[in-house]
Structures are given as structure tokens and as C-alpha cells.
Amino acid sequence: MNNDEIVKVEAYLRKLFKTDALELKRSPRQDMVEVLMDEEFIATLTKDEEDGEVSYNFSMAILDFDLSDDFSGDERFD
Image 1 (cartoon, rainbow, N blue to C red):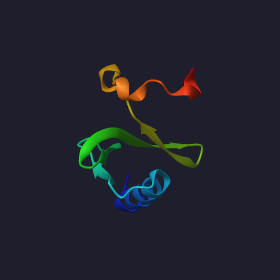
Image 2 (cartoon, rainbow, N blue to C red):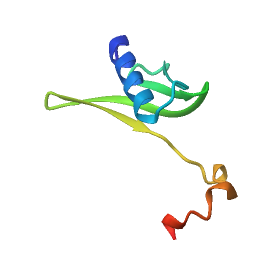
Image 3 (cartoon, helix red, strand yellow):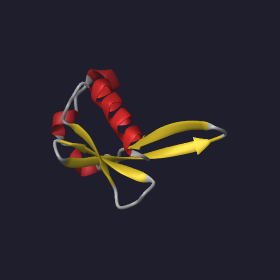
């Protein structure tokens, strides 16, 4: 991803998630950027070009030990 793409996608994600705490940072891998929230790594973002179309893939892993009791009891999922 070039710098212009990173800036545009970062602005889009900040608007989507309603936070300025989100930041995109270049990764050592050329085909990926890191997604940070309050300077903490939360996800990766890659660019995909296929058949003349461009998309950006957001990938976030949620580990089971990160899910504390604070996230249980939501009636929407019972």
C-alpha cells in the first residue's frame, strides 16, 4: 500500500469506528499495515487487487482469554 492509500483507509476506519485513537502503521511486510488502537496492535490490513478491482481486508483475531466475564450476559446472543 502506498502512503495515499494508508491515509485514506485510516480516515475511513476512524469515521467508521468513530474514533481518532485508530492508527495505521507500516509493517515490515510490504503487503500489510498494522492497525493500532491507542498505540496497541489490534489487527492487520492488506490490499487485494483482483480483476481490476481493489479491496482492503481487515483481519482481527480475538483470543479467548481476552474475553472476560465483562462480555457475557448480552441478551442479544441468548
